[in-house]
Image 1 (cartoon, rainbow, N blue to C red):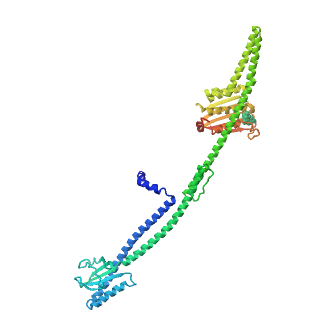
Image 2: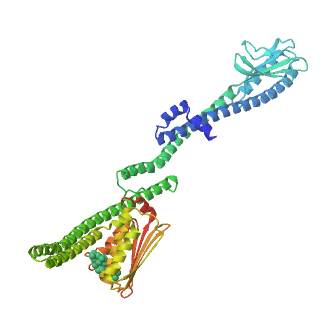
Length: 487
Ligand SMILES: Nc1ncnc2c1ncn2[C@@H]1O[C@H](COP(=O)(O)OP(=O)(O)OP(=O)(O)O)[C@@H](O)[C@H]1O
Ligand SMILES: [Mg+2]
């Protein structure tokens, strides 16, 4: 069915029609359809009614003709034995009587004929009498015929009398014409009125329909130009009203999306700024470290070498070389530590779990804090950006514990779940007041964790109370993670 419609739709004729009609505005289309339907309906009703009315009136005229004819026959029977002029007068009187203003029947002629068809008496006054039809003798069931005569179209009723005479009565069809013409004219007038009413109704309807559509079009253009604040009025509770509502919901969503992407952009800029300043801090620290320890060590190496130059005996040389070796060893250690702190190569080579394992081992020795490190489900490598972020977040959490918590124990849980990654960093230290924001501008650690989490579409929750220890819950949805390879 649908296929058939498609085939019809794609025929060149339909397409050509649609290319013309389809290009017209809705107003023209609706008004064209309404006017077309009214005109067709008017025409159809006029033709139907006219022919039905004509038929009815004609049947009525036949019945009437038979009635009049039978009356005349009765009278002619009485008059025919007397004076012929009395018969003619009677016929004339009958004709005048029916043609008078009291009747809407028009008698065109009355003729009395002899059995052989010759005229006995007539009202035709010299006009050529109509031929008798059908041929004699007259069949009582076939008395009525439509003839074209000197009086125009006539209903001819021919009756045979018992004595053989023939009475022929002609009834004019003018009255039928007149009535049907009057009725046709009335229907025509009504159609005209309907056209005017239909025109006004179609105009109003299209105005009601197109006004909200035009305002929608205008608003859509505004939205396309970036104005998401645009809302349209819901004019009515119909489909177009629903469309207006859907449009408003859409622009609100667009506005929200634009706002959110703006916020995300701002967050990203903040983060980049934070990263840059953190890099600067890191450089300062490295510079300090190089100055304070490495260059100190190299200076003492220099002094040691000068002393070696001045040594005279082998024993002294040996002792000094031994000292220098220790200094070189220490320096090597320092450089190694420095490099490792900057970026543990194990993170790139062996992955997050191994890198954190090493970091935590080192951390436990350094700060004398017992750390439980548990991982679940992290069998495969994550995107490197995410691994680095997770590493830095755990590092910051543990550094905070060492710096602020006065804790003996801490734990780190790293878990890959079906819908994301969860990290929990806990300690049994002194805790802190969460709503204390006094030095929040200087403290970047927790804020950095939150920003990194948000960049991956995740969420940081901190639970802490004075004396109760601190817990950081980091949750990052995995779907977003999978797309954020470059993040
Ligand atoms: N595990 C913890 N135990 C107790 N207090 C904590 C803990 N973690 C954070 N805090 C408190 O929250 C504050 C904010 O921490 P945050 O890491 O943001 O800044 P910071 O460590 O002071 O400075 P930095 O910017 O160098 O990290 C800390 O100064 C500390 O008072
Ligand atoms: Mg910190």
